[in-house]
Amino acid sequence: MKPGEAIVVKNAGSHFMLSRLPEWNPFPAIMRGKIRLEDTESTNPIAVGDRVSYVPEDDIAVITEVLERKNYMIRKSTNLSRQNHVIAANLDRAVIVVSLYLPEIKLPFLDRVLVTCEVYGVKPVIVLNKIDLYPEAAEEIEYFVDVYTKIGYKVLKTSCKTGEGIDELRRICSEGVSLFSGESGVGKSSIIKALDPSLSPRIAQISLAHLQGRHTTSLYEMYPLGASVKAEKGDADDGCPDGGQKSDAGDGCPEGGEKEPARQHNGFIIDTPGLRGFGLVDLEKEEIALYFPEMLRVGRKCFFTPCTHTHEPDCAVKEAIEKGEISPERYNSYLGMLEEDGKFR
View 1 (spheres, helix red, strand yellow):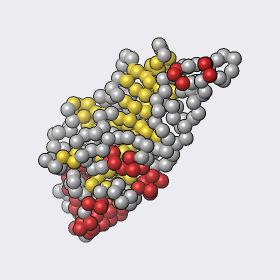
View 2 (cartoon, helix red, strand yellow; view 1 turned 60 degrees about the vertical axis):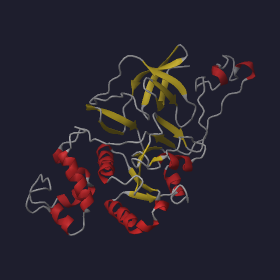
View 3 (cartoon, rainbow, N blue to C red; view 1 turned 180 degrees about the vertical axis):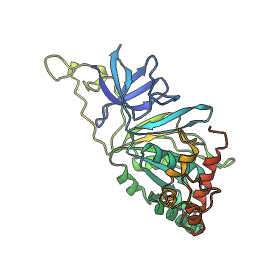
């Protein structure tokens, strides 16, 4: 094993798996000592998707540095309200899975995730899953799609049972790194398995007592789409089975072993535990409206600057709500973020 750089593809606390994307050949790593990121007070200084530097030590990679992130998703840690939790880093998109019912959609949760995407430069894709379960709610479904499509967001309707929307989602995720996120029970793990049956996150069974899904994922992990997930004991540089090293004289592996070929892939996805809360990070109240695209467009016409769009006269945002140009549900989410119920801050 030689010193190098790689991507974190699995985070299990103090132990990690790394791979040199776009090749997929994960190898184990650990973090020793303290690694701090500038301007970030986080419970996890290393996140899945991070680019890291490492050095070999006793046949394992030791992470020495987290390289600069192009973007990331972050939320307040609900049990440690003064600290933040980085969900994943260096993303090409965030796929936010919701369901209209079972469990019932919580628009404030969705809108908090969307605001975070806007703040930290992550492109969101909204997936309305389980549409086969409520054919009688066609008007509600179309209203939801219309609201978020008019804002400018990509919205997909999916069903793992009928396959609707799965091919399009697979196409979207076929390039780069996609974070899959959503509340417990929305069918996120089922969608991932539908995208690539070779992947094996366990499928959640809905808790009828609470109408919330039980957590099926306790780790943060990246998977390659269209490739087998197989961690090797050997170093990815050498690619020899059972940890063997290539000979100095040539490219062969010892004892007749054959070099592992680079695995082909069709994009990568990051699976996350089902979430039951999403607190905003590093955002002042007067800034929140700037990350509601529909309010940002209209808010330039407000008489007062800045305008909180709550009590001020001649507020263009409130006028747009009265005209039906901005959805009242989105505005209610905005008001909730202004109030911040204390659970996250």
